[in-house]
Amino acid sequence: MPKPQFLTKTRRRWIGVGLMAALIAPTLLLSPLPSAHAKDLELNLYSARHYSSDQELYDAFTKQTGIKINQIQAGDEALLERIKSEGKASPADVILLADAARLWKAQHEGLFQPVQSAILRNSVPAAFQSETLWFGFTTRARIIVFDKSKISPEQIRLYDDLANPALKGKVCTRSGTHPYMLSLLASIIAHQGEQKAEAWARGVVANLARTPRGGDTDQIKGVISGECAVALTNSYYLVRLLKSPKAEEREAAAKLGVIWPNQGSTGTHINVSGGGVARYAPNPDSAKKFLEFLASPAAQAQFANANNEWPVVAKVAINNPELHGLGTFKAEKLSVAAIGQHQPTAARIIDRSGWK
Image (cartoon, rainbow, N blue to C red; front, side, top):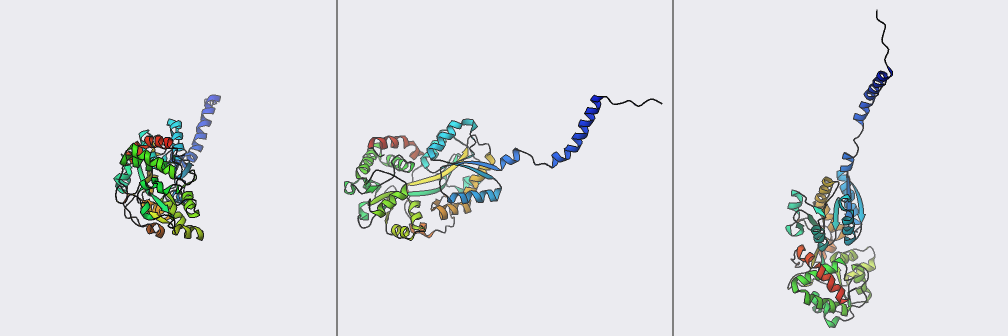
């Protein structure tokens, strides 16, 4: 009878490895997969929208989809510069911007990638989207508020009227370099040409009651305090004061006169807030889902009810009496491309006119 052969050290080692692998294998199968699935449940949002009410939207999206939102906030220009400097290594999935001209700029600097979505294409009006690269989600109007005891509404039917010498020392605006002001001036260039637009800018500067400072709310409060008699503002800032928890602010805002400029001609200037999927988005599927969510009836209603903007999607039910109370108006019909193309000229005019 032959003697049993003993295993060499090498053979014993390999058998041991095999037994260990057999024991570990079931554990591996039961463990959650790393990276790929976890990555899909994240979204890196670069946003120039700084409204606290938007956080409720983001929370609702996460609850609905399980996708966590990592948010970076900054001004439009700062965000665009950051994304450009990050290049292909940028973690940005979605870029949200609060100005039409900045959306146009991001598009032409190649910062978006195409999004193929029937939901977005069919929900967002053609005027508020661009070649599948970005989509508008809200609009706001550039209106004029005035002190009824100092100004007659007949004096300010047009944006042009803000440059009338009769208003010398009575006008308040934010800085001319702010995107909202640049977009308004770009629209004036589109309608009237550079020469007339510069004459208007110089006329407004000559009529300023103070050096521009603060945001649109500060301009409205300047009229309320009597520091100025007339001011430019985006519509939602006025509605915000009309809904203020402070009774004195509600009462003061309600006493202001409101003008929808250029109703007999080009219509009141409209700006748009929107976004798209970043060119090098690491989570493009999550980004697409997020944009589609922003176009949903619930999200569109939230934009209107909580932040006092007009939704772009038709027939969205709005429960905002103060926003409804502003009434209806003729809106400017000017393409985002036209506003974007005239931005460089608008910036030069602002500089030459001394509109700080």
